[in-house]
Length: 368
Length: 59
Image (cartoon, rainbow over all chains, first blue to last red; front, side):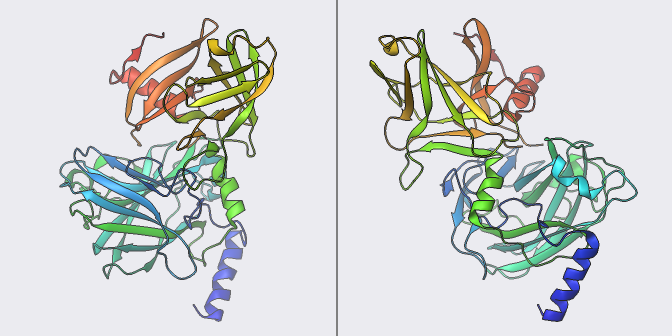
């Protein structure tokens, strides 16, 4: 990009109201991967905030990885590799999903005559060339719009930009729920692409993946990679807004926080929180470094009857049962465990809880 | 829009009250708070109401 073009684009951005905090996507450079760097699930498994998702498939299998292969200026990408191919019949589909919180999207003015265009830009690479669909879904009013981009050369990083017109009808509520979902489709069955979706309208399965021709899911070992994802107000794609790892991690922790992690290579340690004993129960507390979006789910990445350990005056107990307590808030978590083996400790005894062993983790999930 | 694979759900009782739900979601065991803003709780309620998921008796 020439300097003159860059300055012109920044001028347009100023007109649209933002010179900083332009990127409404979190972890668009795929830097943060609290859960791990490789997974085989159709759920959040590697890079934060980006989730491989499938619809109606039966035998399709993938690997998702936080990959170090990336275009110039980026260190990471999200890579999807098909390990068991499946023909996409009916409404079957494969996509990568990113959800944005509604109260962070109020500047779009959706549902009003002042609604703004939005522009999505990203780097993408795939072994499968052809037309791909990027679809947006407005959760509160069940509306969507889509557009296509084309991967021209196999296994080559390409930069894409798509501008979507404003939605003057659908309202994004001002709350902590889902405002806008983005779906990068990799494969779409015939029944999900029969109706044109290039203007905002009520969602239907038939219009969700309109325009998708490329079929990544249909070929074993096919790959699709993405990074540098930016969604910004206005009709101009500006250079990717890089954030520091610490900034990006904090943004991700509103939706997912690793409390303790003893898996190979983790530096987070085994301490879960401070505890005290009451009757046959142990209550464990931890204040959270970032307020979470909602009261979180406790994710129990451990197994076995001795997975956890409480150490307190007069008792050391191993156990596996652990539950989120109703007193948990978005800033403080309280965990309950009932274990007769701590009964030798007097009521009120203080101590701490930790993971007892390797290859385990405890996390909190408040994803959209 | 986003289907979770929920394979077992059971209320967790503490001091005589339902306090959370023990569930296996997308292959991982979780303890889900009874908060409508929590996506796991909302999806469990949706699937139970739709009849595609059955809540087991609490222990």
